[in-house]
Image (cartoon, rainbow over all chains, first blue to last red; front, side, top):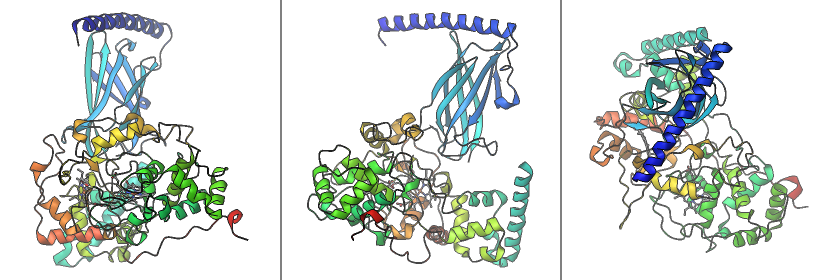
Length: 158
Length: 403
């Protein structure tokens, strides 16, 4: 990246951070005035992982309904429903990345998922597929301002 | 639900013990399947799987299109020299392939002709997955200069030259076949696809064994040969074959590198999946294009999200392992003549041939000759035990029957 575009990029990011913080404040405000059911995550929100202040709940969405066991069916496309929370309730942070790899085989997915913010700390990740049976590791990046928190979680595909 | 699952498992364990007890003492150990093996055996069925029409092809399961597709599949006049039909390379008597290492149409090709049984189940078509749907994979050979060298004009001429073909085209698509119609070739390809969707292979000895285990029918399960049973154990265990050759069709539908050389004589390389993704995204007949008949777009996920990676270079599609006794030789370039050669390839695997950052699943298995034979016996049990009858000829639709 050349210096000029790097500068623009960093300005863009700072502006983005400002916006995000403003949204965050608004979200916090909302969560204090009306009790928000989204946070902390309930059992129905799936598996909860925590790192520092970040609380992330994820669950698998399959085109034809729910998971049969805790394991993810291999070689089928699925989506993720993700809820971000923090100590204050709904998090204003962004889900910046959602991906997965097979640490033992040193490769990732054959598909690049997309992330759609749904508001209220909720995100939908589309285009996931575990194309081989075995141990996979989900990898999330949560961005609040400049701060990026990485969260991982091991799952079994078969 | 959870209770039923447990019951099920317990049942399988009881069965495993029964099998163990019934087997002759010397052969008992390799015949015995653990609960987790039984669960994985079950995951390779049932067969056949439920058939679903292709939402991207509006004439999928349309009787006029199926009949038209059948006739055109065997029609050499679609080709530039009037001598090459789909069936020239996809011969019904050979599991819909040609028995050659690499295909020969108008000129010599560089890839092995795949069989077409159960082709409806594929997610990607071609060894490099350059197509995301069956009809665009069926349009490619018509236009390919090395295979059939056809054109819209030639195809329209063939259709209009036969009252029966023209009638079936009209019945399927609601208009007459005209050369100037940009839909003509796509329509023809959709008709040929709808016929290929009907090519289903019947249950093989493995399927009867798998179903017998499910039913806990010890007597029926005992009919499955001991050698195949031992081979199945290697397939599920040490071989880790099911990591890629998964599910009822014995493929995860994706791509891998197993160290088959990808050099093309006299010079050149076959880039495999890397080239396939480029072809896919450049293809006007992919599912993101205007010819996808699925208005919901529900069938576009694979194409929309596919991610090119460096490792795709030299990756090829994981093929089905069904009907292999009909489809020798093997691999994308037909370089292995027999199943014994394939098993030896995995057994003596040359790890230097795998990409440096390649998949760390495959290791030389160093199987004994007896174990090689067992694995071959298992692979053979995924093919029909008796010769298959010729494909059922789809009837002409009543509106097009000659008076």
